[in-house]
Amino acid sequence: MISRRHFLHQASMTSLGFMGLHLFACKEPVSTSIMAPGYGPLLEDPAKLFSLPAGFSYKVISTWGDPMSDGLLTPNRGDGMAAFEGADGKVIIVRNHEVSTGDVNSGALGKERELLDKIAAESFYDYGKGETPCLGGTTTLVYNEATGEVERSYMSLAGTIRNCAGGPTPWGSWITCEETTERAGQGNNERDHGFNFEVPASADIQRAEPIPLKEMGRFNHEAVCVDPRTGIVYQTEDQGDGMIYRFIPKEKGKLHMGGKLQALKIKEQTSCDTRNWPIVSGYDFPHQQWMEVEWIDLDNVESPDDDLRHRGFDLGAAKFARGEGMWFGDNEAYFACTNGGAKKHGQVFRYVPSEHEGTARESEAPGRLQLFAEPNNSDLLSSCDNLTVAPWGGVFLCEDKSDPRILGLTAEGDVFHFGLNTGHADSELTGVCFSPSGKTMFVNIQHVGLTFAIQGPWDQSHV
Image 1 (cartoon, rainbow, N blue to C red):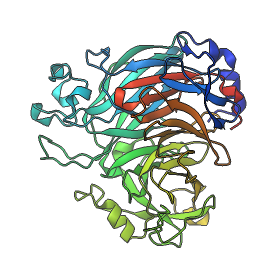
Image 2 (cartoon, rainbow, N blue to C red):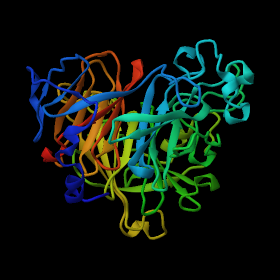
Image 3 (cartoon, one colour):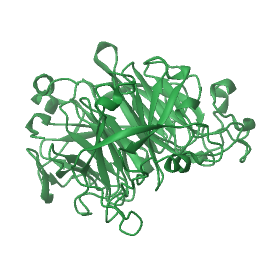
């Protein structure tokens, strides 16, 4: 995490001169009631595509169906993303695609799979008997932050299903997660699904080895984040009764060598229900109160019956309402639960690891969990999904609903609105993340396959 002072020096006002960005003419405010601290209200976009505060601007840098540098087509349904530092000031973006096997129009191979021969069969995780190869995976974009142009793009992982979110690693790779538990034998599937895969952040056109990280568990994966101090990986599960997982690798930075999978438990509370649903919870999980946690060992983690969470609950693990986006900040992790809360509008949690995280001394100073935000007001927040921690520490979230917004959270957990999808209001926003310099925010309008670069006076922020 770079310091706020260093970030502000790097970002400064030079971002306003970003070449090729669509600049707003100041028009009528779209919203003034929940304005971003220091940014002001959202202004109507003359192009009627995406509304932002004054001084901010966007550019569409990638569109579904665009030819890529490897001869394939840009897939649809972009989801989780992260941006990495490349050579010569370039930014390497690794982007998920939440594409199902039968959704041929959204894949990279063309409507008749006519481009199938451009990927070697062994580069697919699941080739689908050569008839219906799985169409999910990741693409990588090499982005020039000085010119605002994508200089190269390619399919970097092939043959998976519904790659929803994931997370960056401190060693320069992206963990992509399958949000499915389809089995071998379903349709033409040749392999079981529901795993994580590691994709190097590389400017060179290459396919990642499609090796499932099986010891990280088989379930409806959503997102991960990695503590750079320990190399421990935290994971969310997109189920209405999901768990929060921790994976302690045998060797830091080498996830393929295996490790131990565990589930989060609230200390001295067996099978605590954090969802705050009045009908089922029977317990009011306290707002902004720190709760000490324990971690429960899990076995049979490949879970052929997709019962890992049920076995975890039987052992006392806590229950969460559709764990979604997750990101590691300055010695703390944030994660969103899409329909948690008394009115099911969403929750954001914060976890601070133990100073002895993952060791035999952990019980001396346990990790702590806090319900950071639960507005229970859809005007403020509804169906929070992907999230990121900005270089200066602010949290930004995407919504998965009609008329979706980019939201921000202040240090006190208050919500503000930063962006509004006005052009394709029936599509969720996904993949929010920042470039390493902090000058550019990236985000997707998922269902129409657009990826944006957003710049502006970030140094006005007071969050």
